[in-house]
Image (cartoon, rainbow, N blue to C red; front, side, top):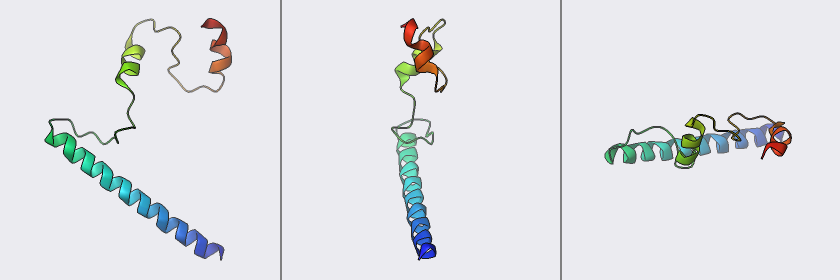
Amino acid sequence: MQRLRGRRLARVVAWLEHRAGEALDRAEAAAQRSGGSGARFARDEGVPLSTLRALGRPGAAGLVSELDPDAPTRCAGSA
């Protein structure tokens, strides 16, 4: 029973990965048609432009630039 369940799960994951690949291919083709770079990112996977600009500013105090589980406790008093 476990093997059957595992095979079904593997097929579902493979199908989802295939569908995601197709979506990326369509998005890449559409971006290239409209003069974009065709970078392989889904629409919601990129970092917002405003965040990129804020991180690029010298002395961007208060912005967490790396994932750190203790950052909220360390940065709580500095805001």
